[in-house]
Length: 364
Image (cartoon, rainbow, N blue to C red; front, side, top):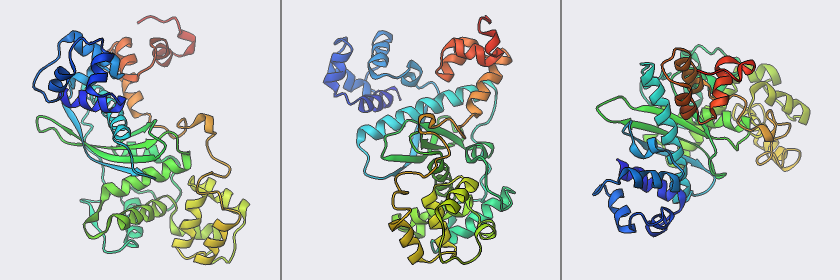
C-alpha cells in the first residue's frame, strides 16, 4: 500500500518520477521510485522521510498504518477535473480519514456505523420520487417539517464522516467509501468544498446524502443528479413548511421576501427559487423571469450571504473529530503533542483548547 500512497501523492504534487527524484536530492533514482510505487521495493526510512517532505504529506500517510483506501469516489464538479486535482483531493481525504480512525481506535469507538434513513439504497422510477424519499428520510430521523438548523451536525450525529476541505474551485464535493483491511466495516465519507458559500455547502451535503441512499440503476447519470438535487431541495425546504410561508400559488415574488426566506432555510437563493417552481408555487415562466431580472446573478453570487467570504468554512463546520481528540487528551489517552499532530495545529493552540486561553502556559 505504500506504493499506492507514494504514487497518489506524487500525482497530487504534479511531479514526474524524474522530478521527484531530483526533489529528494537524488537519494534514489526515478527507476527506484517507480519500483516503490509498484510495490516491488520498499524505501528506507531516510528515503521515506525525504519523500514525505518533498510531497508535502505526513509519514503516517505514506506508511498507511490504517491500511485504508478510498473507493467509489464520486466527484460533483462544474467541469472535468484533472488527474492532479483528483489526486490532491483524494490525498487530503485519506490523510484526514486516517487521523479520524486513529482517534476512534484509541477511544474504542466503532466509526463505521451510520443511521441510514432507509434500509438499503432506493431505486427510483422517476426524478419526482426523490421528493417522497426526502420526506421518508426526514420522518425516519424524526425531523418534523421545520428547517434544519445545522446540516453538518445532523449528518455527523447520524454517523457520516464530514470533511470541509480546500478543494479545487470546480469541485463542489464528493462522496466515497473508505475501505479497510482485515474485514473491518467500510466507512462512509462526504467531503465538501470550503470555498463554497455556507448555503451551497448545505445543499451539497444534502445532495451527497441523496447519493448515499439512492440506487441509480434506473436513472441516467443526468437524471441521477437531478434526483439528488430534488432530494436536497425537499430535504432542506419541506413543501408543507414553505407553502405556509409563501402560500400555495404565487404569480410574483419580491427580492426582500426571497432573501428573508433563504435565511430561514439556510439555502442559496437560486435553489429556493427552483424549489418554489418544483412544488408548483410559481410557474416556469415566473422562474425564468426571476433569473433574467433581479436574480440574474444568483447562480454565481449569493445575495446577502449567511457567512462572510473571509470566514468561509467557519460556520456549521464538522466538530466531532476535534471533540474526540480533546476527549482523548482530557482522559490522558494521548499526549498534547499527539493531539497537535492529529489536529494539525500548534501545541500552544491545543493547550488553549484543553485548559482555556487563560492557561496558555499550562504544561502537560
